[in-house]
Length: 312
Image (cartoon, rainbow, N blue to C red; front, side, top):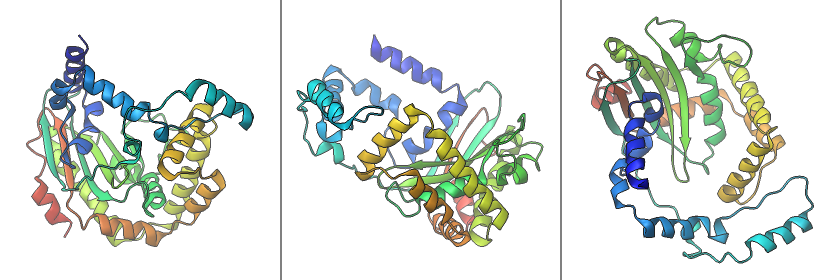
């Protein structure tokens, strides 16, 4: 009963383009098999093997506590977790399956609720262990973006570049937003946008132009200061939540083997320069672009080859 329900949920998911949209790049640009194709291969044994290999592997577990002494936490950990020995290879938790970035395009034409065509343009950059991580986060904040409608107010990013130069400039731009996706060995920096189908070519052109501008012109001091301050504010505000704090501890320990404190993170953000931003943009547009588009009509969206020619 579970497998048919999973397939049904995925098929239902495809009619919600905002949700489906951000799944596409990770599935296709690294040439990975999509979830719907993989579902028929699942059975009880494969689920059990996954559980033993990833969830019951002590080398891939992190136990964190707050408001409790270290010795007491150790005692409780031994009481409840000491019997876990793991059914898989202890090295499997740290294994990285190589992924080769190829760029390319993916088009998914399907009826949508709102009738908009959504386009995402992205390029490869370094992953979690790259020196580009913090500058890229600053760049994403600088670009910002969101929906064409906003109630305003502080912290909404109304002065971000995509708001000022896309959403406030083009009546047909329904949405424009920068995004990042980081993995162990690689990552993505992209901008997504949505418009009526007849303007999807113009939307794609605008997204490409913003990458080109970042690579050839320095951002302003005002933009950079605002982006650095907003990123620090977002990080510190998120970490006020115990739930987010625990997740942050676990992710950092598993990724880096240690946890970096907030003072160190803020210092790295403050050290990002205009040269760092331009250098990242220059390097990413030298690689093949990745294009993904979803909508009722994707025929107006330019081809991958044409977009690549714009970057030269």
